[in-house]
Amino acid sequence: MIDAPRCHVSPPALRDDFMTQLRLAPVLLSLTLLVASASAADPPPKPNIVWIMAEDIGPDLGCYGTPALQTPNIDKLAASGLQLERAYCTAPICSTNRSAMMTGMHQTTIGAHHHRSQIGKLPEPIKPITHYLKEQGYYCAIGCGYGKKTDFNFTIDKADQFDGNDWKLRQPGQPFFAHIQLGVTHRGGWWNKTRQESSDPVDPAKVELPPYLPDHPAIRLDWATYLDQMEKADEQVGEIVARLEKEGLIDNTLIIFIGDNGRCVFRGKGFVFEDGIRIPAIFSWPGKIQPGTKSDELVSVIDMSAEVLAVAGAKIPGYMEGRPFLEEEAKPREYVFAARDRWDEVYDKSRAIVGKRYKFIRNDMPEVPYFTTHAYEEKVRPIRPVLWQLYQEGKMNEVQAYLMQPQKPKEELYDLEADPWETKNLIDDPKLAAEADKLRKALHQWEEETDDQGRYPEPDSHVAKQQRQEIAERLKNLKEGTAKYPQ
Image (cartoon, rainbow, N blue to C red; front, side, top):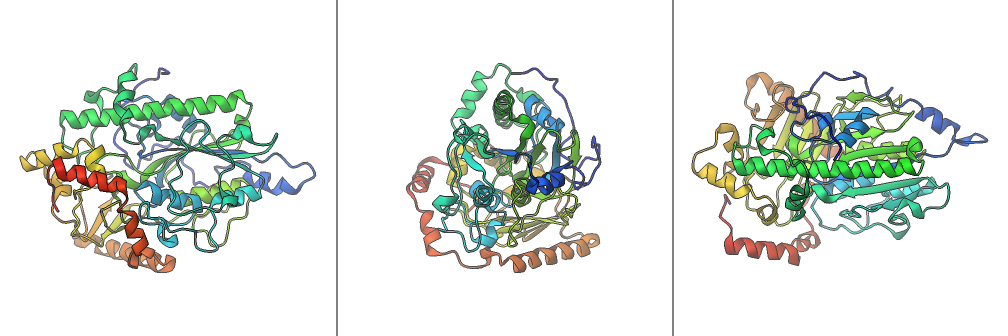
């Protein structure tokens, strides 16, 4: 592992100590020139695009101010380009958010909002971004020596599928789009192995726990082990960049590093809180993106899909909800939206709207507790029984016990500037009634305009998917030996 100084910075507040305080519009130095000259007699080669996506992570990197870990390769990537401070998923669960990223459409618009509930073919005229990249002559690769996971809630026509598993299989001189998955950060049996094999595992005593988690040795160890996976992912990013450099491709390659949804800890993945939908997002492109740029503009993952098409010289489809954000004519978003729906056997429904300062959440099924029994979480989140025990013993403060209540509030309002960890629900504050109503109406308008499919009954075919053997086995194991939680 490359040595780098360990640093200590405050939690992920909306910081204003940016190296460069810029709107996004001027960040891209010469994309307009690049696209405009595409019809010239001797057009420049189209840029390669490498989209690296780590599973289940928050902005827990050195460049985002996280203490106790070392991520020198990703930090270097961020320093060489653009770091988004407020990048958001459209969903806190992998397949639903990936479905949005692959199409540039909210999963709720295209009916892909229930986790791994296949909808079949995409509704017309929606196409995956690979369709438009191929029209521009791109070779579309998946994996490239790492994870080949796609996990979309729809089937892709053969003509629009990835061409192969490595960019080395393309024709000489052909531009490529590489979709690379880093699965090491996804919870699994390899977590302990990664920690054991690390020459410098993260010290649990030095991690900075969020205020909603009790300070307990098991919880500290779990968080440290998560950061170990981040360090391993950083090594893999370093390997990918080194390969691009070795093959002489780095100068004409846009590298994107993001997470597929929020961090894989309690209150993260599966929740529309910040820790479930706010992700790291880094764009590096030598000579095209100004080094050392940070931005606090709101950006959705569907905007990143549109940006990929813009970089490739493709026309953005008129139906696409995502929009490029680096170009000179780009208009900053006023809001980003996120949605939570079915996750395996747990049927739930929440919607969130995030503005510059305030965030509004509407829980349409408040009777489903935050801490509801969920076979997947029982299997992969070892601190769940610890949290339940601490709650039962009265060893949680008010903030920590908030998620243990038998019902969710119907609505939530948070001041992200003053309260980045979302510890104080301000929905009943009379001083903020107008703000809450404004966000409530904007959320409703978005649902109407996009025809949010979560408003309609779930098709029987979707429900049947939840009965597959994997979930049935988890539920069987849970019934045989796991403690009972609020129902």
